[in-house]
Length: 115
Length: 113
Image 1: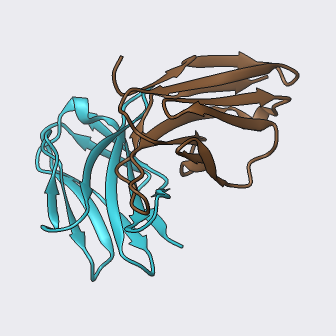
Image 2: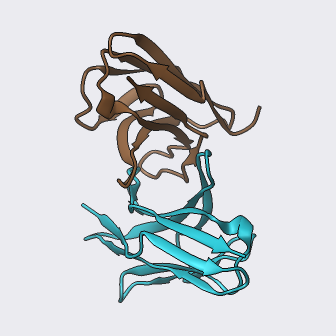
């Protein structure tokens, strides 16, 4: 595997389900990101992890819970979602050089549908 | 804070025609500029970026973009498009000392035969 991978690629869940999205980067980077892409809206940055520490949380509802167990893996745990949470969830990674961050590389995304 | 405006949400063109996708940004500090491309059912791929040096940057598949500081623009151009260039294109900006990427709303380029 190369680059940034995400699983599953598609997910359909009910509002009472609990599921997790997984992202893995094979680039040796030390920073990882979750974005939400909704139709006709700019990408929304949700969370940023640098050196496995959460450094940014952009007013994301608590029904989204990120986890970064190591620099190569990032999870997004989902519970009691709403239909408006249906979107493409993109993971990205980059090299954080202490105040300067290199280019972000994106995974293919997980298409989430909440019924 | 910075912002990005992509002036056209949809750009339909015929194959082998030239195309320009417009991007304007707003920022109070120095920025880096990026164009990403998203093919159907895929994630974003970096197309090209301006960090410093020559204001004209090129991608391997024939796209180019020019950083114009006075007009705060970073328009993307290609002299002759192919059907395979059909995709959504996102302009993004980032402060030179930061990590946050701010994206535009995207421009859907559709190349017709």
